Image 1: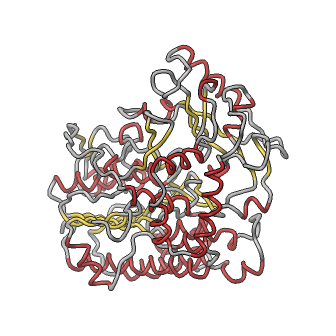
Image 2: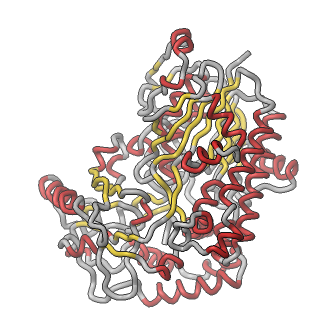
Image 3: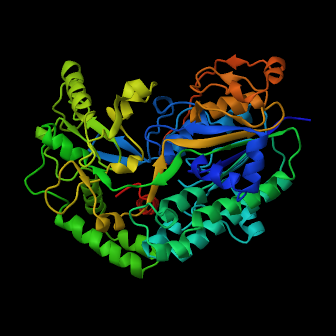
Length: 561
C-alpha cells in the first residue's frame, strides 16, 4: 500500500491544556494518541502570529525566504503597510512540491492560502479569504459542491463579531459550528477524492483561547465567578468536541497512514503589563512626537462611531458604510493607528506598537529617513539593543524581555530587507506590546487598569510554543520529544511520504520521532530545486472592499488596533 499522511492543524493548541485534560481522562483520544505517538512542544516563530507561523510550516523556510512576516507588509513608499495573503508568499508550498511529483493532495482551511493555488487535487483556502463570495477553492467548482453537500460552509467563524457585541453565548456556538463543518467537509472530501497527503486546520482552538480565557482561568485579571460559571468550560468543550470528531475520523484510516498533528503557536492569558515601545523610544531620544499627541480628531470620531455601529448593524452593512469614506481619509485614519503623530524629521527609530518590532528611520529606504546606512544604522541599533534589554517590570523589578534581536540573527534570505530592523522578544505573551493610551502622558512600561483590559478585543493571546504529535508505522510510541520547530514539519512530512527534501528548506527531519530500523531502511534524500519563475507573484491583491473586511476581522481578533 502507498504511504499517506493526514495532517490535523489545531490553531493555537497547547499541551498546557491538552496534557492535564488527557491525564484526567477528559480527552480520551488525545490520551491514547500520546501513549501511541511521539509528541512534544513545537517552537513557533518570532513573533508567534498566524501569518508568519503558517507560512513557515507551509514552506519549511524562515520569513527571510518566504517573505511573510505578519498579516501586514511594509510599503516603503510611505510609512504604511499593505495586507498580505498567499500571493505574497515566495517558495513552493509542501502541497505544490507534492503535486509536481504526482501526489494527490487535499488542503482545507490552512491560513495564508488565498487565493487558492493550482494543485494536483483540491485546495480550500483559509482565514485570509475575504469572504464567502470569493473564489476560495481549486478547482472553482468544488466551492459549490462543498456548500451543496454540507448545506453551507464557513471559512472564518463570527466568534470575534459576537464577542464585540457582548454575546459570548453566540460566539461559543460559532466555534462549535466551525468544528462541525470542518470535520464534515474533510470526511466528505476524503470519501470522494483520492489522496496521498491531506491537511485540515481547525481555528476554533485559537478563537476559544482568544475570547474565553477570562472565563476559563480563575487567575485571570478579568475573571468573574458568575461569568466563569456560564462560559468557563468553553475552551475545554472545544477541545472535547475535537477529540470526539477526531476519534470518528481516525477510525477509517489504514495502517499505512501517518497522523501528524500540530499547532502554529501556543495560547495563554494576556496579563496586566504593557510596554509602549514608541514611548520608550521617545524617552531614550530616538523618536519625537508632534506637539499635538494622540490620534487626530477624525480618527477619534470614526473610532467612537464605529463602536456604536457595531452594536447596531450587521457586519456586512457596516462594511458598506465604510465604503462611503474616501480612500484618502481611510488611509489617514488607518495610519494614525500605526504611527500616531510622529515627527519623522527628528525620529531615528519607531514601532507600530501592536507587535514587538522596531524600524530604523533609514535614509534611502524610509520616505523621510534620517539615519545613514552603514555605521550610523548599526550604532542606532546597538544603542537600542543595549538599553531596551534592561527594561524592567515597574512592580517586581524583573526583566520583561528575553532579548532584542537583529533581524539577520533570526532570518536569512532574499526578503530579509522587508523585515523589521529589530525584533523584540518578551517574556510570556507578545500581547504585552500595546499602543500608547490617548489619556494623557504615560510611562513606557506600566500596569494596566481593569478598565483598560476590559476594552481589549481578547483576553487570551499567543505563546511561543505550540504542539506537535506524530503517530504511525515506524514512529516511536509514548515518546515525549523536545526541540522541534515549526519549520521541521515540512521536511519530516516529505520524508514520511518517501520524497526527497529540498536543500533550501531551513527545517530538519525530526529523526527523534522515528524508530531506528525505520531510519535505517528509509534513507533520506535531498535535492537542489531551482526557484520557479512565478509570473503571478503578488497578484493576489485584495479589492478595497475585501481589504476592509480583512482589516475588521484582524482587529476583532486583536491583531490590529
